[in-house]
Image: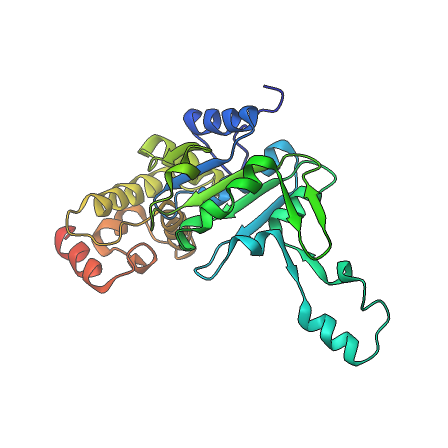
Length: 270
């Protein structure tokens, strides 16, 4: 493999995750990433781009997003407006074609990393509607009769929170990786990339409480990695001692976000 993704100063990746990224790059296939919210799926694309020295293009998917949005948009309203006011060049349709994020990635002069973020938010047909473009690395603009071909095949990273099942035909074309929730050894490494000088005892006590909360059977929303990082920052800013963490659960609203979970945590960890 010519290009190798490695962990960066800001992003600690497991050996398995690095291997999945590098296999996807070598096989020239999209990498589909699943995992709990807050486990660093979106940040992975940023880390890959930084590690390989490439530009990152982000396509944020919403419930209303259509596959066409990522290809191009024909601005008929602007063309009509320009025609009414006598603007020159109104007959040049190409002026009113705006490329979407996938189109930008195809037209880039150098290889880029394309993040298709939270693909499961869109409707069920969305992934299938992208199959041709992701396979062939091209699409056709009907209004100008032009085919846009990728100058360089982008490194495509797709994230999903598993809100919807993705079609089998789409899954067959992807390399899949599930980001497991970090164990305590990896979690300490992750936290220390953000706060290298955090006091050891404070970190240990905070992590003990954090994993204790995640282990509670009745908890509805388990706290995520990003919430632990925010909590440790709050504890440091607040000057909280390690001993106070379990006794008082200071700033617990940083990691526990539901009323019923807060009550459960206070009862079970008392």
